Length: 147
Image (tube, rainbow, N blue to C red; front, side, top):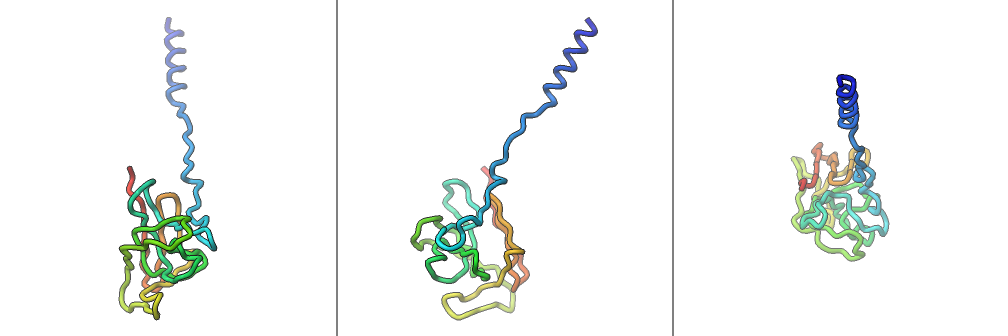
């Protein structure tokens, strides 16, 4: 009886201690895919079907910048709250916000107020984006709310 109870206890502990491995597919996402040339995507964070798509904007016009962000650029002119990915038509970029401190970096239109940045100081993963605005030494983080 004692041996049977001991074996049952060991079997129960063995199976209860083993946890099923769950795949984290989001960790394999590269938000920068499609942000160059005619991919027309943006690296910012959003919830699926969310109304807000907060992402950086380079501030320059052009076919390659339809989604607001172009990987080969080196400036950020703001973080707007509405974007479209892969549309092939410029749209939205509404409610733009640009964190700054004095002295403000300003260029002629269309760029205006902006900051330089480096891809070595930029990071993105599914639901998260971070960049150092080097002209102001401001680290900007964007992350989606969790459901």
